[in-house]
Length: 118
Ligand code: AMP
Image (cartoon, rainbow, N blue to C red; front, side, top):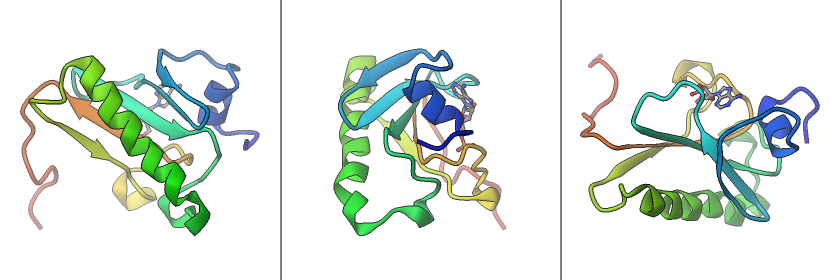
């Protein structure tokens, strides 16, 4: 738990969210500003700020984020057509909330790469 972290506050039910998945280690909820028809955020209940802060002992926990992504994708009905999971790290990648989270995006065709060519 980090005191001023909004995702920790969602875990502790101090601020509301549209929660769609929960187990002992992982929580998922719909993004407040969705950019796809399915846009969920999948977070560990342990506060980890960025990918750079993941320790070897967190490896199983990070794997559980992906297991949750696949489970949610199945429930959302997008598992077979396909979906994308993205984790931004730090400012240049657009990270704005410093509690690691997978974005689960789906429900439409997506281009690749998702950024303009250099
Ligand atoms: P990132 O830019 O990768 O750090 O992603 C942060 C995401 O969190 C953004 O897509 C925001 O729309 C989303 N977000 C921020 N606050 C909330 C909230 N209270 N509930 C749900 N999603 C949120």
